[in-house]
Figure 1 (cartoon, rainbow, N blue to C red):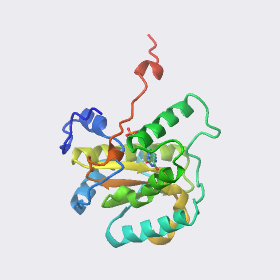
Figure 2: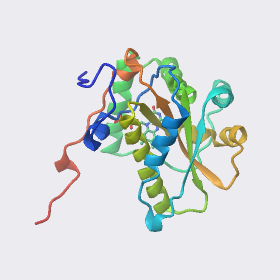
Figure 3: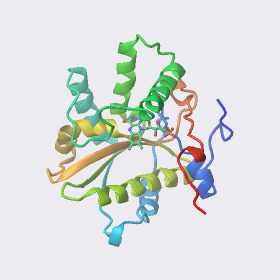
Figure 4: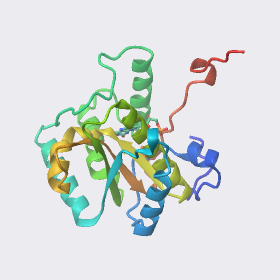
Length: 233
Ligand SMILES: Cc1cc2nc3c(=O)[nH]c(=O)nc-3n(C[C@H](O)[C@H](O)[C@H](O)COP(=O)(O)O)c2cc1C
């Protein structure tokens, strides 16, 4: 794997550096993140544009005992065979090309970095379970939106999410956005005292990457520009 900015990955200095050096990190060091740093990242993320500047995003920052309570409650459900329920559709249904092929490539890329073979369903499940520990990150985030807001506000919140991840790189930190949490919205509601009028969009892990962990040895590729852009003269 080619990681030009390892080891240590200093903070990104330009917007392009921050965007390009962002990747989904699935193993973190226990080093705590100071509250001022989290606030700074949130403040930068909050500069995201939104239609009429309505700023529809909400985020719960979870650390310490509350993080332990949340991860324990969700993993208990997962271990009991309760895989939660879908609050909104994130993935295509049914899957079709070209998205199915890209999804498979990503899944197998991660599993092969972890040495998990195709028939090792238990190890795949164990890897999926690591989502609910925020991959051992010291900070977990839960992003929510008012249930009555339409797709435009989800678009705005997506920009906020991306800003957050890029701003984290600007502070030398790493993230993993985690839709996996949405299935456990009921438990999240209970632990964080969220009201029913909010939809849980996703979770996110935040911290310093552990580059010695094979889970971070996988780097995703991207399709070339000509495959998704057209120029009209
Ligand atoms: C909204 C969103 C939700 C995601 N949910 C998960 C998740 O639950 N678990 C996980 O391991 N990765 C999750 N990912 C990470 C994607 O798999 C990852 O972004 C994609 O494979 C591209 O890799 P990169 O982020 O390293 O560039 C999510 C990404 C996004 C944008």
